Length: 252
Image (cartoon, rainbow, N blue to C red; front, side, top):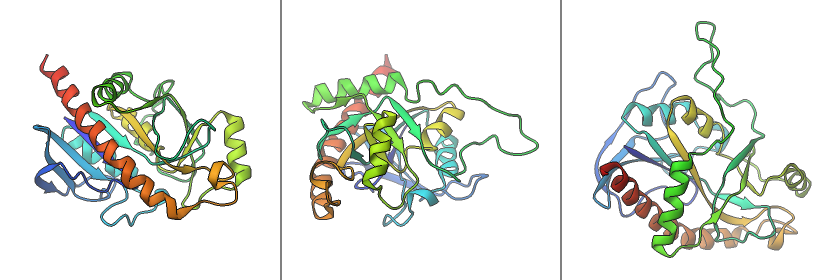
Protein backbone atom coordinates (compact mmCIF):
# COMPACT_ATOMS: atom_id res chain seq x y z
CA UNK A 1 0.00 0.00 0.00
CA UNK A 2 1.11 3.55 -0.72
CA UNK A 3 1.27 6.19 2.00
CA UNK A 4 1.49 9.96 1.60
CA UNK A 5 2.83 12.29 4.28
CA UNK A 6 1.78 15.91 3.92
CA UNK A 7 3.80 18.79 5.26
CA UNK A 8 3.43 22.57 5.40
CA UNK A 9 0.89 23.58 2.78
CA UNK A 10 -0.47 20.07 2.33
CA UNK A 11 -2.61 19.26 5.35
CA UNK A 12 -5.11 17.35 3.22
CA UNK A 13 -5.57 15.86 -0.24
CA UNK A 14 -8.56 17.53 -1.86
CA UNK A 15 -8.98 14.78 -4.45
CA UNK A 16 -8.80 11.95 -1.91
CA UNK A 17 -12.11 10.12 -1.58
CA UNK A 18 -12.02 9.36 2.14
CA UNK A 19 -13.29 5.95 3.19
CA UNK A 20 -12.33 5.98 6.86
CA UNK A 21 -10.16 7.51 9.56
CA UNK A 22 -8.33 5.37 12.05
CA UNK A 23 -6.40 6.03 15.25
CA UNK A 24 -3.51 3.59 15.19
CA UNK A 25 -1.99 2.86 18.57
CA UNK A 26 1.77 2.43 18.57
CA UNK A 27 4.44 1.50 21.15
CA UNK A 28 5.76 5.04 20.70
CA UNK A 29 2.63 7.03 21.45
CA UNK A 30 0.17 8.71 19.13
CA UNK A 31 0.76 9.72 15.54
CA UNK A 32 0.25 13.34 14.50
CA UNK A 33 -3.37 12.61 13.58
CA UNK A 34 -5.67 9.69 12.80
CA UNK A 35 -4.66 7.97 9.57
CA UNK A 36 -6.87 8.94 6.64
CA UNK A 37 -7.72 6.06 4.30
CA UNK A 38 -9.16 6.76 0.89
CA UNK A 39 -9.00 6.40 -2.86
CA UNK A 40 -6.85 8.53 -5.11
CA UNK A 41 -7.33 7.94 -8.83
CA UNK A 42 -9.18 4.75 -7.92
CA UNK A 43 -6.37 3.34 -5.79
CA UNK A 44 -6.21 2.95 -2.01
CA UNK A 45 -3.77 5.21 -0.20
CA UNK A 46 -3.21 6.31 3.39
CA UNK A 47 -2.62 9.98 4.18
CA UNK A 48 -1.05 11.53 7.27
CA UNK A 49 -0.54 15.23 7.94
CA UNK A 50 2.88 15.42 9.60
CA UNK A 51 2.07 18.54 11.62
CA UNK A 52 -1.36 17.33 12.71
CA UNK A 53 -4.80 18.83 12.35
CA UNK A 54 -4.54 22.59 12.06
CA UNK A 55 -0.76 22.44 11.64
CA UNK A 56 -0.16 22.61 15.38
CA UNK A 57 2.89 20.38 15.89
CA UNK A 58 6.27 22.07 15.33
CA UNK A 59 9.00 20.11 13.51
CA UNK A 60 11.07 19.29 16.58
CA UNK A 61 8.02 18.00 18.49
CA UNK A 62 6.64 15.66 15.82
CA UNK A 63 6.44 12.04 16.96
CA UNK A 64 8.23 10.68 13.91
CA UNK A 65 8.51 7.17 15.34
CA UNK A 66 4.77 6.93 15.95
CA UNK A 67 3.97 8.33 12.49
CA UNK A 68 6.12 5.88 10.57
CA UNK A 69 5.20 2.95 12.81
CA UNK A 70 1.47 3.63 12.39
CA UNK A 71 1.75 3.73 8.61
CA UNK A 72 3.80 0.55 8.56
CA UNK A 73 1.35 -1.18 10.91
CA UNK A 74 -1.58 -0.71 8.51
CA UNK A 75 0.32 -2.15 5.57
CA UNK A 76 2.05 0.82 3.96
CA UNK A 77 5.15 -0.29 2.04
CA UNK A 78 5.88 2.86 0.02
CA UNK A 79 5.94 6.43 1.30
CA UNK A 80 5.80 9.69 -0.62
CA UNK A 81 6.72 12.47 1.80
CA UNK A 82 6.01 16.09 0.88
CA UNK A 83 8.45 18.37 2.70
CA UNK A 84 8.45 22.12 2.10
CA UNK A 85 11.92 23.67 1.91
CA UNK A 86 13.88 26.84 1.46
CA UNK A 87 16.13 27.08 -1.58
CA UNK A 88 19.84 27.48 -0.93
CA UNK A 89 21.15 26.87 -4.43
CA UNK A 90 21.09 30.00 -6.58
CA UNK A 91 19.40 28.05 -9.38
CA UNK A 92 16.34 27.34 -7.25
CA UNK A 93 13.35 29.66 -7.07
CA UNK A 94 10.17 29.70 -4.98
CA UNK A 95 7.63 27.50 -6.72
CA UNK A 96 10.14 24.90 -7.90
CA UNK A 97 9.62 21.25 -6.96
CA UNK A 98 12.75 19.27 -6.15
CA UNK A 99 13.35 15.54 -5.86
CA UNK A 100 16.35 15.38 -3.52
CA UNK A 101 18.80 12.49 -3.63
CA UNK A 102 20.76 13.07 -0.40
CA UNK A 103 20.35 14.30 3.19
CA UNK A 104 22.61 15.94 5.74
CA UNK A 105 21.19 15.72 9.26
CA UNK A 106 21.73 18.69 11.60
CA UNK A 107 18.89 17.85 13.99
CA UNK A 108 19.43 16.94 17.64
CA UNK A 109 17.47 15.46 20.50
CA UNK A 110 14.89 13.75 18.31
CA UNK A 111 13.96 10.10 18.81
CA UNK A 112 15.70 8.80 15.71
CA UNK A 113 15.67 5.01 15.93
CA UNK A 114 13.45 2.10 16.89
CA UNK A 115 16.49 0.24 18.23
CA UNK A 116 16.95 2.20 21.43
CA UNK A 117 16.95 0.38 24.74
CA UNK A 118 18.96 -2.04 26.84
CA UNK A 119 16.90 -5.02 25.69
CA UNK A 120 17.22 -4.24 21.97
CA UNK A 121 20.06 -5.16 19.62
CA UNK A 122 22.12 -2.44 17.98
CA UNK A 123 20.92 -1.82 14.43
CA UNK A 124 23.06 -0.13 11.78
CA UNK A 125 21.03 0.54 8.64
CA UNK A 126 22.73 1.25 5.32
CA UNK A 127 21.81 4.85 4.58
CA UNK A 128 24.20 5.49 1.69
CA UNK A 129 21.27 6.31 -0.56
CA UNK A 130 18.54 7.63 1.75
CA UNK A 131 15.75 7.73 -0.84
CA UNK A 132 14.19 4.87 -2.79
CA UNK A 133 15.48 4.74 -6.37
CA UNK A 134 12.23 3.05 -7.44
CA UNK A 135 9.98 5.77 -6.03
CA UNK A 136 12.21 8.56 -7.33
CA UNK A 137 12.01 7.05 -10.82
CA UNK A 138 8.22 6.85 -10.57
CA UNK A 139 8.05 10.51 -9.54
CA UNK A 140 10.23 11.50 -12.49
CA UNK A 141 7.99 9.58 -14.91
CA UNK A 142 4.88 11.06 -13.29
CA UNK A 143 6.23 14.57 -13.79
CA UNK A 144 6.88 13.90 -17.47
CA UNK A 145 3.42 12.42 -17.95
CA UNK A 146 1.84 15.43 -16.23
CA UNK A 147 3.89 18.07 -18.02
CA UNK A 148 5.40 19.25 -14.73
CA UNK A 149 8.94 20.44 -14.15
CA UNK A 150 10.60 18.36 -11.43
CA UNK A 151 14.16 19.27 -10.53
CA UNK A 152 16.14 16.06 -10.25
CA UNK A 153 18.61 15.88 -7.40
CA UNK A 154 19.33 17.99 -4.38
CA UNK A 155 20.93 17.75 -0.96
CA UNK A 156 18.41 18.28 1.83
CA UNK A 157 19.79 19.87 5.01
CA UNK A 158 17.55 18.78 7.89
CA UNK A 159 17.72 21.45 10.60
CA UNK A 160 16.16 21.57 14.05
CA UNK A 161 13.75 24.48 13.83
CA UNK A 162 11.25 25.78 14.53
CA UNK A 163 13.04 29.07 13.91
CA UNK A 164 14.40 29.78 10.47
CA UNK A 165 18.14 30.01 9.89
CA UNK A 166 20.55 32.91 9.95
CA UNK A 167 22.28 33.93 6.74
CA UNK A 168 25.56 32.67 8.20
CA UNK A 169 24.02 29.27 8.93
CA UNK A 170 22.80 29.03 5.36
CA UNK A 171 26.30 29.88 4.17
CA UNK A 172 27.62 27.01 6.28
CA UNK A 173 25.03 24.60 4.91
CA UNK A 174 25.99 25.59 1.39
CA UNK A 175 29.67 24.98 2.14
CA UNK A 176 28.66 21.54 3.39
CA UNK A 177 27.05 20.84 0.03
CA UNK A 178 23.37 21.40 0.87
CA UNK A 179 21.07 22.88 -1.77
CA UNK A 180 17.79 22.76 0.22
CA UNK A 181 16.93 23.38 3.84
CA UNK A 182 13.99 21.99 5.79
CA UNK A 183 13.03 20.85 9.28
CA UNK A 184 11.25 17.51 8.85
CA UNK A 185 13.37 15.33 6.60
CA UNK A 186 15.03 13.56 9.52
CA UNK A 187 14.61 11.26 11.32
CA UNK A 188 11.61 10.43 9.14
CA UNK A 189 13.66 9.00 6.27
CA UNK A 190 15.89 6.91 8.54
CA UNK A 191 12.95 5.49 10.49
CA UNK A 192 11.28 4.44 7.25
CA UNK A 193 14.50 2.66 6.26
CA UNK A 194 14.63 0.85 9.62
CA UNK A 195 11.17 -0.58 8.97
CA UNK A 196 12.01 -1.52 5.39
CA UNK A 197 9.74 1.05 3.76
CA UNK A 198 10.52 2.56 0.38
CA UNK A 199 10.58 6.30 0.96
CA UNK A 200 11.23 9.43 -1.04
CA UNK A 201 10.76 13.14 -0.44
CA UNK A 202 9.10 15.62 -2.76
CA UNK A 203 10.21 19.13 -1.86
CA UNK A 204 8.32 22.26 -2.94
CA UNK A 205 10.48 25.37 -2.58
CA UNK A 206 8.52 27.93 -0.53
CA UNK A 207 11.13 30.68 -0.38
CA UNK A 208 14.76 31.57 -0.88
CA UNK A 209 16.78 30.62 2.19
CA UNK A 210 18.06 33.39 4.47
CA UNK A 211 20.48 35.71 2.75
CA UNK A 212 19.51 34.45 -0.72
CA UNK A 213 17.46 36.10 -3.44
CA UNK A 214 14.53 38.11 -2.13
CA UNK A 215 15.36 36.79 1.37
CA UNK A 216 18.63 38.73 1.36
CA UNK A 217 17.44 41.02 4.14
CA UNK A 218 14.82 38.74 5.65
CA UNK A 219 12.24 36.11 4.76
CA UNK A 220 9.29 37.53 2.82
CA UNK A 221 6.48 35.76 4.65
CA UNK A 222 3.78 37.52 2.67
CA UNK A 223 4.93 35.70 -0.47
CA UNK A 224 5.17 32.20 0.97
CA UNK A 225 1.45 31.47 1.26
CA UNK A 226 0.69 32.43 -2.34
CA UNK A 227 3.67 30.43 -3.57
CA UNK A 228 2.63 27.32 -1.68
CA UNK A 229 -1.00 27.56 -2.76
CA UNK A 230 0.09 27.45 -6.39
CA UNK A 231 2.88 24.92 -5.99
CA UNK A 232 0.84 22.47 -3.93
CA UNK A 233 -1.68 22.19 -6.75
CA UNK A 234 1.18 20.92 -8.90
CA UNK A 235 2.29 18.60 -6.11
CA UNK A 236 -1.20 17.13 -5.90
CA UNK A 237 -1.11 16.41 -9.64
CA UNK A 238 2.31 14.81 -9.26
CA UNK A 239 1.14 12.64 -6.36
CA UNK A 240 -1.94 11.46 -8.25
CA UNK A 241 0.06 10.48 -11.32
CA UNK A 242 2.70 8.75 -9.19
CA UNK A 243 -0.03 6.73 -7.47
CA UNK A 244 -1.36 5.63 -10.86
CA UNK A 245 2.08 4.61 -12.09
CA UNK A 246 2.82 2.75 -8.85
CA UNK A 247 -0.38 0.77 -9.01
CA UNK A 248 0.16 -0.04 -12.69
CA UNK A 249 3.62 -1.34 -11.79
CA UNK A 250 2.15 -3.49 -9.01
CA UNK A 251 -0.49 -4.89 -11.38
CA UNK A 252 2.19 -5.99 -13.80
